[in-house]
Length: 213
Image 1 (cartoon, rainbow, N blue to C red):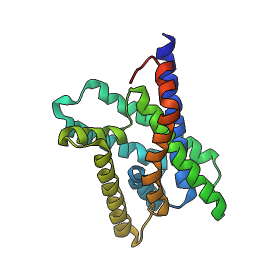
Image 2 (cartoon, rainbow, N blue to C red):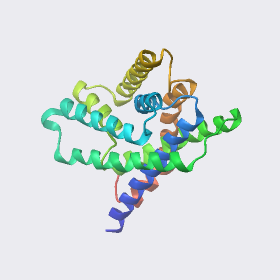
Image 3 (cartoon, rainbow, N blue to C red):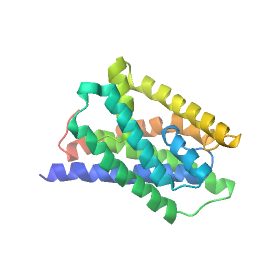
Image 4 (cartoon, one colour):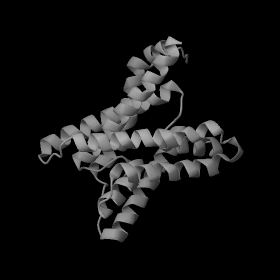
């Protein structure tokens, strides 16, 4: 029983860290992570709430995942929707609490910590083997359907998100919104921090939660 509780503690702590990392990326103003870039771009251009637009995006991703999985989509997968509500409320909370930064040094710190926390939070969530967030769920669904390596599908999916964000922002504003050097850094760095976390802490997390390799 204690290990099951520990599993959910790691899960929600991972959500908290992941959402903080994503918001720090937005605060850096160097460009946001690829999957969330669509929501950030549209929310910025239309002056809408970032968390609410992100929730709509996650619902769309969950619907696409349903179509990709077909009969393999289980009722359990629908828990991604309430998960998205929690995650995006954290977006709003951290977005309101954390101050905007303007100096280059502060923006760089935000970017570094944002990438690090996004990777750590994502690794903690994945290691619990509970409900994935829709961004991870849809990538896994495409990887399973196409019989391709998860990492390769993730790279392609990130590039598609960046391309769609650039197209949308160019059509709506004539420029590029939400995409920058920080986006490229996130594409490279998030995976590296996931690897680092797993190197040092995955075995301990699995032992604490009653899971095994």
